[in-house]
Length: 212
Image (tube, rainbow, N blue to C red):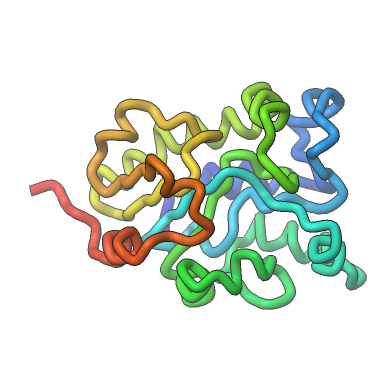
């Protein structure tokens, strides 16, 4: 079954023409220096229209050596945007090694089991207080938060998907998200870990709980 609940996310990012979403242009004029806008942003990774596990993360990472290398070929920017407007499973040539080579979610992204969605699509080396403050003012972040509270939450409650909120800070999950079935919001030291624990992966691998 196609994930119709993910269609608003795809429709939103299908409007990306360069590296900044049209609704964000005004706000990005006041962006902190930590944010990089040179390349199309990883708003989501993987096939959000078919994934049965969603991993919610903070924001797109930036590496001064690796990120430019990902976009070194002619047409790489356009290829990246095409995968935002027509999502597919992750693969070499359009998915950052950071996601593709992870031992926890990399195999899921490659076979279509999972997709990643970032609260803040744009890239930075670190999530500083300035980045967090900027995110709160950004229309695309507000859209992602509404999508979580409305569309993704409804899909989880209906037993269609399992959701792991790995990095909840920029998402600001609502009480409804925190207590919903098929939603696992990590806390304590877990959000700072680079990979999901075996216990979290085991939970995410189970079929979603359905309403009896």
